[in-house]
Structures are given as C-alpha cells and as structure tokens.
Length: 308
Image (cartoon, rainbow, N blue to C red; front, side, top):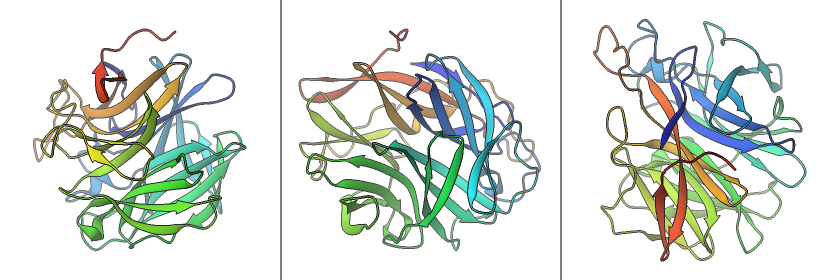
C-alpha cells in the first residue's frame, strides 16, 4: 500500500471516494475533518463542522487539492481554496456513482457542529451532477431512522439499485434499501448485522459481490453471489487491514475500478503527525491505496503498483 494524499488545509482527509470521469481524470471526494485545529471546539467538534474536500489526479497516485463543495441556495459548488472558517452544517462520507447518464452523490448531512455523538439528526441527502463540480440538491432519503450515515450505492444483478448505510439507531449495523429507478426506495431491513460497524462499500470482482465495512479494528469482508445475501469471509473475528502505517488499522474506504484493476482507497492515522495540544491525540489522517484481487474465492490485498 502507498500513502497518496493528505489534506493541505486541516490534515484530516477521511472517508475517501474516488471516481474516474469520461476524460480519464480521477476525482477524490472526502470528509475534510478539522484535525489540525487546536481550537475546533469541545469534545468531538473537530470531527464535525466539515465540508467535502475535492482532489484530482491523472494517475490515481499524485493528487492536487481543488477545494471544497460549498452550499448555495440549492446546490453544492466546487470552490477553490479552504472552506469558510465558520459553517453551520456538517458534511460527511460522500458516495458518488454514475447512473448511466449523470453523477449522483449520497451525502451524510448533520445540522450544526455537534460536540458529542448522541442527540443529533443525521440524514443521507441525494445530489445530482453533470460535471462533478456543481451538484443539484434533490433532498434527504426516507430511510430507517433519523440517525443514518455512510451511504454505498450499486446496481445488483437483479437490476435493482441498492443503497447500504449505517443506522446508528439500530446498533450501528448495515441496513439496505432498494429501488428500480433511484427515485422510490423500499426499506429491505438489515444487510449486515453482528458487531457494530460503519462505512460500507460494495463492488463486483472476480465473479462475486463484495462488501467491506469498517469495524474500527480493521475491515470486515463479506461475499455474495447476488449482492443481496452476504457471508462473512474468514469468520466473525477475521479482518483485513488490521495493521497499517501510522497508528494501527485502516478505516472507512471505497473502491474504484480502473481497467482490469480494482483499487481500494481508505484512511489511517498520519505517521509522525503533531498531536492535539490539549488531549495529546493524533487526530490527523492520510489516505492510502492498495489493489484488491480474488484468489480461490477470497478477497485478497495486493501491494500497490504503478497504474497501467
């Protein structure tokens, strides 16, 4: 694996989602945590108050910071430079997919800048775009609770679109909804239960469907023949990316297909980073990438290599 990106504003790039446009330009959308600020506010305020950072690349390895997605009356617009010093809404964990004619983003939005975890509404909001720069707001999705985050969207072999997400009100497991047209969604219940987790990403590789979830100790891996029923790889305690550079394990990532390769981008604690003055925490994060393969029906991690 290689380190590919650190946010130049707050040094807190997390929850990366990478897509490749029709001109071959790689785009990274990520949660821009305010990790470098010693005065971001009490408690977990520094994890909130974030915008969506945007970076671009010609090869998926060397990235240039392009700015943040800033809200207007009804849109999100890519603006160069750092975000405003003060914001009134938190944006997290963008999921970006191509629906065959345009781009769609499923974004976690939270009112205000919470300083603690309980008691704040979290919703998944849909946006659409033709160019990845300006996003028209469609509105929040009616899902299983008002504490939903971390969307993942894919079209499964039965022709339906499915949206997987973390429901904090359901013991932080992965729920799923389905839609024939990305307009009306049906709630289909629990997709992945068990121990609490977050940040699902779903993709097809090697003749199977795969879901990777963040368990805060490494990543749980699930396999499916149809994108509907899931079986855990390696048993309940098995994880991948339990040991990465920095401080421990990999966190919340997402995939991108490029030619015959599947690359996985995720974040981890930044190595040799300044700690927070008051708490002594290493809050700073860096984005890594590696290649995933399938061998004998199991998802395996490969060393990164130069793009072809």
